[in-house]
Image (cartoon, rainbow, N blue to C red; front, side, top):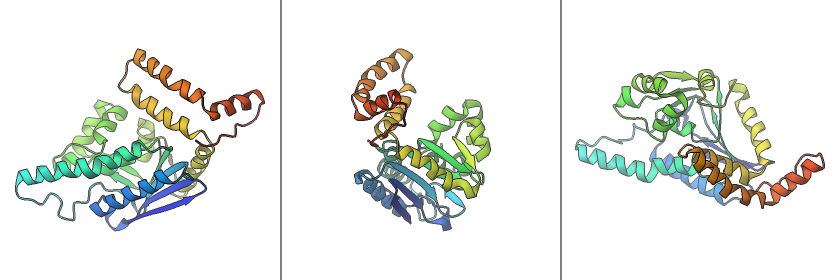
Length: 263
């Protein structure tokens, strides 16, 4: 249900239950957690790519297996709190904190929790067949989760995010690029080719610096300019002390391409 392939320093994860649009069942979440642990421990891996099999990327939580069926409201609430605390939120946090740059190759519809998962990556490339839908509220009477309630207003703006959530509007891949929700849209045939083209560039680059950029930009979202300047002053010296910076400096002076070690 989750495939992992490691080749040319690129770890490719494929959600592989196309019959239910790669919905996040407990079994799939468990296997995905195992795969992420494998990637974290594998020194060969310099980039992580996630995609889905079939027509959909991810339909969010798997609602077909009895989840939320308890008649008692307290039991439903407790089960939901446990699932979010122990399974769903840790998954998003693991992707956000992987020690390598990440690419989401969104092959089809990203609905519900799949919306949040699709946007948990450093770079998001989508097939022109893909779409993004916040179906939580009109379909289930819920707020967006798996980070979707953060991504939607931050990237779409409140004026667009609220109707998208209220009505479950479908946002096409091309429109998602125009709105700043994702980075790039390509044809379905070009999706994985483009994802790997970018991944190879990243694999040759300074991995530590890519992760540091992610952290710096996330920090900026909760900081004033003065606080961000302090953060830069704390972070930059560590990078300047790295071998990659020295290699980049020498390459600049020698007018050649840097030969980064990848760490």
